[in-house]
Length: 74
Image 1 (tube, rainbow, N blue to C red):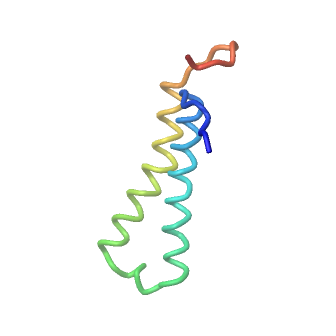
Image 2 (cartoon, rainbow, N blue to C red):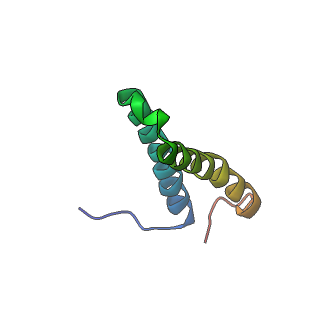
């Protein structure tokens, strides 16, 4: 199986999907094991993952993303 060529658009999609999946994993873990929500270390790590994964990624993309109308990122 040959993978498609990696460009900036593909990298952004993979990074966004990975961050979103990590946040979903944290929320799922909190649903399955609610006693972890009382642990201070888990709360700190979950908060860091959610803030960096969702808010940080979106803001970084908005401020550094290319906004031209050509459609290619090369």
